[in-house]
Length: 259
Image (cartoon, rainbow, N blue to C red; front, side):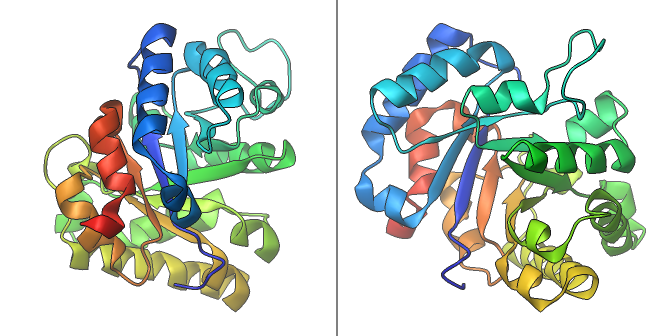
């Protein structure tokens, strides 16, 4: 893995933890990680919106090397969008990474490739890093459409960006059939798709972008499978769901090098 592609492991808390629970969780995680962990891996946590200010305050007060992330945002900077949060609002809270286009957003809230593309651009314009998600359903995989489907999501989601912009973001490959199901793509399956994604980036944005873009795998990532996943050539990190809610478990994932 090129030095520029420092691994990134992200905890997506989804709709879990009030702000008191969030403070406790990030403190426990901080205590379980050491300087070597942060030298080797970028660690991001993505609490619900209501927790962000509290977690930001704790990270700053204790000088934690954990990066604050958000789970979503709108693409407009302000306006009559009841219930939405803008990229600039997140940036003011020192949010560094924003998950964009998670499969749950696409499936449950009808997000499209076009809206994902708008969000990717808006997050970057606000000085943050998008973690753009992609992935296929079990039906699409069984029908032999997985690669073409994911390629379509990549091309549409990154449309209009330059090579340098693509190089600096994160793509998260999450096979939908492996999210929260206990089923995990084999490390070979995950590598095959992540390699395909890098190839798509290479074809559309050039060799430099392909060499530098970080590709995470997500889908029932646990301490028991993270080391094998991270040993693959094109997997640069993980987007962790359920296992990130337990600080001990998430710390063990971050410390995959010790497994």
